Image (cartoon, rainbow, N blue to C red; front, side, top):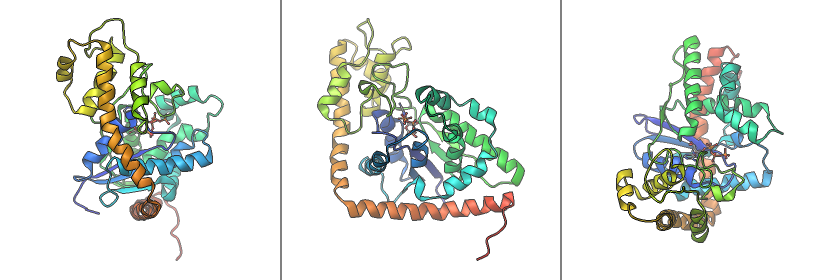
Length: 334
Ligand code: AQP
């Protein structure tokens, strides 16, 4: 692993089928970073069980997500791609960082509040301490930068606070990471409720476009996307539906907002939605084809899983040993 490059860590939960939001807010940006940074891209299955998961489905979704990481163009030779549960140091550091995270801080996390509202029957301690495990994910690798969507900014701020608090007590142990929030695709909203973000766990399937949705399904969901009573395509806070579709169009076609507004200045919403749908299909179809090719190659996928875990383990061990020593755990006798 190149020592001179800055290090990046990011991850995604295998908590459902991934959406256009996950793709534009995360995956697509990750692929652009792999040549210039030393990147670790994790499949955070330990975070996923903060919400009840069906075991067989979770296993499948984890493998599907790995396949999708590869299909969008993440190269396992250039990046470290692995499952969080294969590197037990995440849990070990997570516990230590729990002891450096205040309840007042966790109480303020909006994702915790949202998830409590969604899963009122299962408000578990893991959901509550999710941010300290996320801090462990990042700090374990001494990441300089963390590319995330706008929705994760608060968790990242807390990670920085935890790192600074720990360093304040024990010296320079952790690199304090910076957020890396790309302006393009930073927050894709739900198609029918554009005041909230597109999420893979959304129960209304018409709110999300999935990475693996077939073209006809994508076009149909686009047709049903919420708009407004004007018939003018422009980006404005009072037009959340149209603004969201414009944002999606710009992200998938790499167009500037002003140019997109000009392009659709004189067209009706129907024509506009068709154009956005077609642009999304054009972007996703080649990825879907690659997913099918990669998933057929079991030996290749298994090798990626094994090598990724080994590479991640090596770095994680170095940080964890240092932390254990700093907090005063007795050395192991070998
Ligand atoms: N709507 C979105 N727009 C842009 N970026 C998004 N991300 C998620 N939703 C959007 C980014 O995708 C990455 C994966 O995040 P995650 O899987 O760890 O969890 P999440 O943010 O909670 O994603 P979901 O889709 O909303 O999952 P569920 O429904 O399981 O909670 C992150 O970089 C995130 O910013």
